[in-house]
Amino acid sequence: MKHRNYIRYYRVFKDDTTVTEISINNFLRIRLTPKNNNYPEFQLSAHGHLYYGYISKAKAMEMAKAGVFQHISLLLALGNEGKQGLLQYRFNHFQDLTVNLVDANIKNIDLEKLGTNVLINPTHDFNN
Image (cartoon, rainbow, N blue to C red; front, side, top):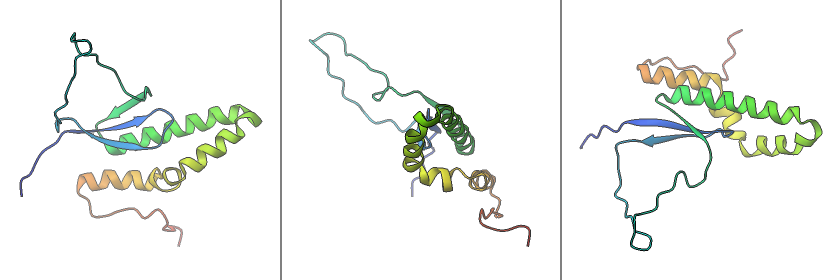
């Protein structure tokens, strides 16, 4: 089996909880078509949203979580006007807010990277 080393970074869009893995050196050939037989026209991000890139998945998850708290704080500051937006945001990002961005899962990503076999169980009660 052929092993390929791809350099990756992790992208987090502003006010979003999704962490996307982006391969930097796994290029696909694109076809550029000139407009009016002149120079090709290039555009930045198609969706126009601001995003941040991180070299560590755990760091990207931490920053996504911090962005979530900031966005929720802005919605809470709106009072009753932001209530519907807050409920919709919670509904749209339920999986990330309750499972993926939990501190124990972020620590597990770090431990997996180090090759440690001890993983943290987020549902374990350490008091018993």
